[in-house]
Each structure stands twice: as C-alpha cells, then as structure tokens.
Amino acid sequence: MDQVMEQFVLLFTRVIDIGELQQQMKAQMDIRGAAMDNYSAEQHMIAQQVKANGAAVAQLTMRRFDNEAAYDDEDGVSMLFEEKASFQNVFAKDKGTVKAETSKVRRPQPTSGRRDTLPSQAMPKMQFPKFDGTDPKIWKDNCQSYFELYQLPEGMWITAAHLHFEGNAAKWYQAYKLNHTFRDWDHFCAVVEEEFGADDYRTAMNDLLDLKQTGTVAEYTTHFQALQFAVTMHNPHYDDMFFTPHYIRGLKEEIRGTVESQMPPTVHKASLIAKIQQGVHDRSKARYQRNVSQPKPYMPPRIENKPAPQPTSLWKDR
Image 1 (cartoon, rainbow, N blue to C red):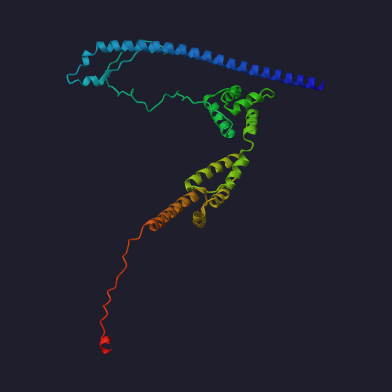
Image 2: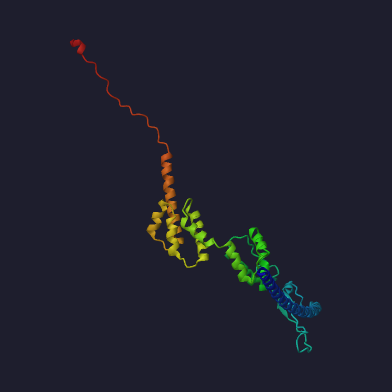
C-alpha cells in the first residue's frame, strides 16, 4: 500500500511538473506571437518607405538627366560632381509642394569595398558548448555566456544543454532522466557537477602537491599553472604565498637553489628566474661536454741528444 501511495505521489508530481512546463511554453508562444506581429508591422512600414524612396530616386535621376547638359565640363571634372535635389517625403506631416533646388555637390568617395566594419545588427554564429563529462564548471559558465548572448528563454536551457551532451555524459543523462526530474537550470547544473566534478578539486590539489620537474622549466611551468588554475577555480582563497613555495619545491636541485635565493613573490617571477638559471646550467653543461669530448693533440715523445761517451784508454793501461 505504501508503495502504491509513493507511486501515486510521484505520478502526481510529474503531472504538476508537466502542467507547469506547458504553461511556460504557452507563455513563450504568446510572447513569440506578439513579436511576430510587431515584426510584420515593421516589415510593412519598411516596404512602404522603400517604395517611397524608390520613387524619389527615380524622380531625382530623371531631373539629373534633364539638367546634365547645363553642368557639362570640357575637362571631365563634372564626373566628380552630382546634382543634389530635394524631394518630397511621403511620411512627413506637411505634404506641400517643394521646389527642387539643384547645386553642384562634390561626390563622396565610394566605400562599398570596405570590409573592416560589420552591420550594427550582425551577430556571429557560435556553436553551443558541448559537454563530454570533463570540467563541468567551465561548461556551465560557457552555457551562461551563450544564453546571455542569444537571449534564449530560460525554459529552453536544459533542453539545449542536454542536446549537446556527448559520450559518457549523454549516456548518463538518458539513464538519469528515467527516474529523476530537474526542477530548474540550477538544479540541473548542480546534479551535473556532482556527477562529473565531485572529485576534481581534490585530484587537482594532490597533483599540484606531488608535481616534480622532469623535463624543461617551460613544460613544468605549464603543467603547474594548469593545476594552479584548476585549484583556484574550485577555491579562490589560495594566493601566491601558497603556490610559489610549492612551485619552487618541485624544481630540479641545480635550479632550485638559485630561485630560492631570489625570493620571488609570484609563480610568474619564479618561472622567469628558473628559465634563466636553466639556460646558464645548459650552457655550462654543454661547454663541459665539449671540453671532455674534444681529443687532445698527439705529442711525440721528446728525445734528448746526449753526447756520445768518449772511448777510454783503460785497455791501454792494462
């Protein structure tokens, strides 16, 4: 009996959620309908204005052809000038007759070939952020930026987000929605972060504390900064007084002593000193290897010219 009651309560809750969702969709459809009506009215007004402008341009062109002979120039300078005439504005309140006035006005330089500027209403097309289960905090921030940029209604945020799930994230969503519902966008993001990012903070902190330099200073710095940003993303209270000593502690022994003696206040300055010290150490090592590997020139043994012994007269004495 209790199970039946629980199922009934769950069914009733789903029905209420569906009703609220239908009301939201109806309100959105009403808003869109009103927007389409306003858009149609604006299009009709623009069409009338274009039609009136076309008639005015045609009238101006005919007047220019009629008066072109009066402004003919023998040197061809008249091509740089055009006739300026006033025409009747059909949208003005005062529709009195206006006498056309002609004058020589210098023609502006053409700017149709310029491409360095975009129309004020142009919006670059951007892809919705995809999610495969990595870095849910970054994905959530990218989604918020996309919603603000394109003014997407909040009722469509969850739908737009899960349509761009990939890999393990898409499979998780299909399994999760069978027994659970999402109240709103914040609840949806909280569930996603709990599922895919619950251990990111601890893992990043442990990796940062255990990191040691095995290659170049640049590779070590890049890896350390990636872990530093990951830790700061979850806990912004750590400052350079925490990260700089750990960075110096992970350097190689031949570089660590010089960096510690300089007492750098930030990781950036410590990395600069470490790169300089690595350059000095590499040059010294290369010089030593060159001296060891270079063969010594062959020196023949020195022969001393000793005077030949003089024959003695001992045999004569004997």
